[in-house]
Amino acid sequence: MKPNSVLKVLRETEALLSGHFELRSGLHSDRYFQCANVLRYPRKAGRLCRALAESVIAVGIQADTVIAPAMGGILVGHEVARALDVRSIFAEKQDNKLVLRRFTIKPGERFIVAEDVITRGGRVQETIDLVRQQGGVVVAVLVLVDRSDGKVKFDCPTFSLLQLAPVVYEPAACPMCAKKEPFVHPGS
Image 1 (spheres, rainbow, N blue to C red):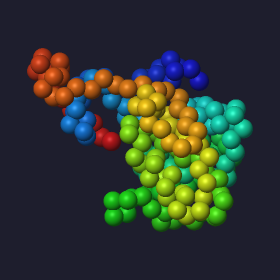
Image 2: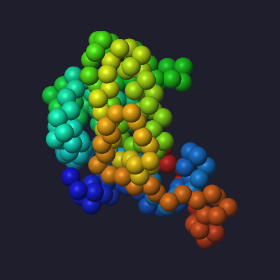
Image 3: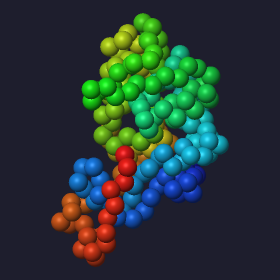
Image 4: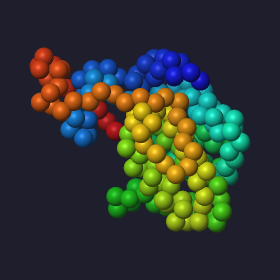
């Protein structure tokens, strides 16, 4: 799927928002990805996730299971697993770290880690570490949107439908603040 087609779907579903946003980091931006919005539309989300799955099929990567960090990645992981016809599981927060509360990993089981958006890649790396601690093997990472513009690196093949880095500003240098435009705190 071409980046322009992905952007079109993200705009149509309001997953790519324009405005004045204060991010969790305290920085400001004129764009924000809220991929939960595209996931409200199962057919459109399914098309995007199938395109992600096709990227690993095209290079011959095979997995037994797709794992996603909760919350944002759960539906992405499920739809990627559906496209690959493999099992889907998720890791969830407990005491501020990701754990497997409902599922087990078999030694040598091959995993794809799926996520909706990465910025710094922390939750994906935490999921990779969790799989490896349980004896699994991570064969690839799949994300709908890579907000790092390809700067975040994992030690396995990584595929995304869209790579870009929204422009961010320190509040004191924010042109929207200079125009007295109110900002919002989007959900994460």
